[in-house]
Length: 269
Image: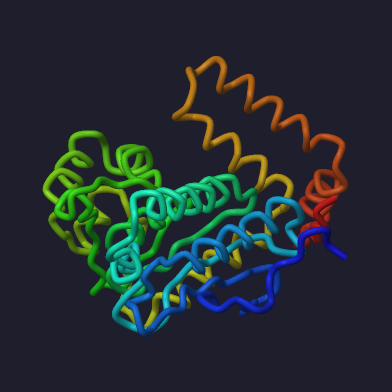
C-alpha cells in the first residue's frame, strides 16, 4: 500500500491505465475548455506528489485533454473574475506548487496535445518531457494581452524549448501559432492527424516502459540538469546517476537478455 496513493475521486481529471505501466491523465472540464481552476490545480498536485513518493507501477505518463478541440485553455478567467489580490495570489501559489511537482515527477511525461493549448495549457506542454500534437492544435501564451505574464514556468521552459529570441516573440506578442510552427520551433516533437495522436503517444510510451525503469528515471534527471549547470558539473551529476544503476538487478538482466538474444524482463529493482 502506497503512503500516498494516486487519487481515485478527481473532479477535474480522468485517470486511467490504457496499457500496462502507462498512466493517462486527461484534463476534464469540458464545460470550461479544460481550463485550470483551483480544484484542477490541487488535483494535479496530488497526482504528481503521489508519483514522486511512489511510482505505483507507472513508468510513463501521457497528459492530454478531453475532447477534440481543446487541450487546455489556461487559467479559468471566469473563476478569477473579481478575485481579490490576496485570493489571486493564493490560487497562483497553488498552481506554482503543482507545476513544481510536475517538473519533479520522476517518470517521463508525454503531452498529447489534442487541441488548443493556450496560457497555462501551453506551459503544461513546455513542462512535459516532450510533446506530440494533433495537426489542428494551436498554441499561445496570451498572458501579456491580459495584463499579466506567464507564471507557470513559461518564461523558463519555453526558451529552453524554442530559444530565447523565439520565446520573447511568442510571449511578448501573445500571438497564437500552429502545430507545424510548434514543431519547427522545437516545442513539440511530432505532429500527427488528430485520429492518430493517442496511438502515437501510446506507441512511444510503450517503448519507454519496455526499458529499465530505474535507468529511465535516472537518465531523465541527468538530462534535465544539462541546461542548469556547466558541462563538468553536469557530467559529475551524470556519473552519480549512472552509478545508481550498477548494483541493480535490471542491469544484470539487461546484459543477460542481450547475450541470450531475448527481450529483457525489467522489474525496477
